[in-house]
Length: 224
Image (cartoon, rainbow, N blue to C red; front, side, top):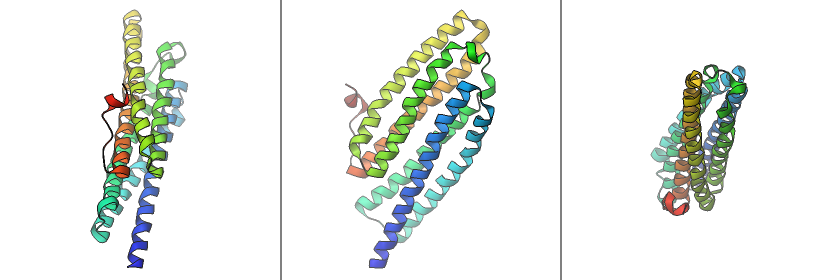
């Protein structure tokens, strides 16, 4: 029995480690994708795009390990909840990596970068979204439902940034028709950053469930 318990604990530790590794790569990809867009750095964009394969491979490893734990260890109650949460979180983190890759792929499609004023609004929005990813991973590692709720509340900030950027870009396109193509690409970037915030929020809800057995209050209650 002691051997079985030790083996289970080792599996859970490995599962947590894989999630942390995935999350760290996804967070880095979001930061670097935005840096590449702002600076027009093709090499950095290529690094982000290539890294997506690492994130995908880690997700598959999480899937295999979680299924093995359920099949061989038959976890119950809190333990089962944690394994299921890890399985779901891995899928969401993989999507965050996809959004970073999508952003990086816009690198050659924004012209007149230095003169394109709306581009200056993206880094601040991206910083909040990247911090949400970082903090939700911290909450997962620490089993901290309070921090998870704080991450959920912060999604409203990302949404407000998106609304502001959207209005700015539409105005810019009307006043500068020649920039419509670049503005549309930047709107695509902003939308992907907004989705990163949404997915960080989804992870936070799962972290809260894994830690407490309950889902957090509605976002409206966290953002009165």
